[in-house]
Image 1: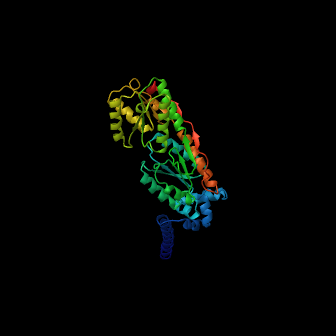
Image 2 (image 1 turned 120 degrees about the horizontal axis):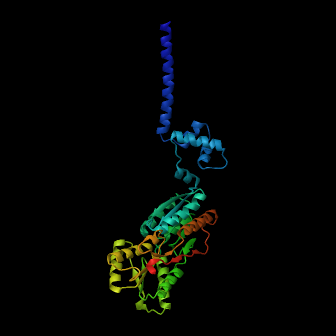
Image 3 (image 1 turned 90 degrees about the vertical axis):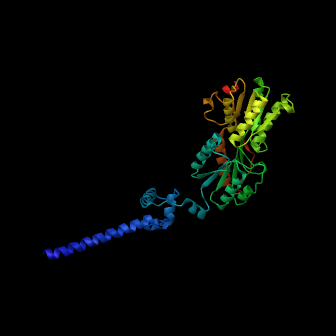
Length: 366
């Protein structure tokens, strides 16, 4: 009896082990290899279009089926290639955000505003930083001509320079929306702030505070925001009766160390009693110069600048700001983008959307 049972048991165990190894090897192979949507469809006995609808969160798929597909995909380690599928379907559902810098609080808040709208439309975002280098902007936008994104929301770096890399995008029906820093010569949706009026009123406020030697610090005064903000300062000084020699516009640099030397030398030589900065970083450098040179703010020098710095009131002394509605600008720019995406004509050109900035006087101008 035992001679009969033993071979049967060995045979049975062998069959079980063989089946186990077969299933194990199949599962391991499917997980380790380049598992694609066809493999997942085959494993579940469904069509690839059904699998695709589940990952795209389409409304025309049974919720239970969708849940099973997502669970199975997770079990097998499958991740859909968003870009590959979007290129096939010519619908990337992705918006590129192109910025001169990220360290500036204005841009980080603007990105939050953009993403609030893009998420509501089930779109992804990709952020690119040009570091205020025109050639880098050209390179990034040329690369994006490959159809990787549906549209581009950008704050320009190369105002006043060639814009072929922008027009090439619009020719390919990739809409572009500008915010804050723009190419003035291009017909495209733009979201900006009342820079001229803000700069003019700020200068007027300082004059009313008995300041007589007001200087304006700027980077790239020949570009859109620098040019407009500088003009607001110049016109306010002229209207108050100041001559050309009494109007001081100091051209600074993107490099903080270079700007430090420029600002330090200017303050020590010219002894202004007030400074307006066109961008946030120049205000921070001015504070550092005053700290190192033991110049009292605001008693010896009043300081105010265009800035969205969230901790402006925590600086010593609290920093007076011309605050742009960065978050709202981002939202408006994204809303304009979706208008463009829905338009059969691509970028529907309209008058720029102009939002008001807030002039907030704190201790640094008291």
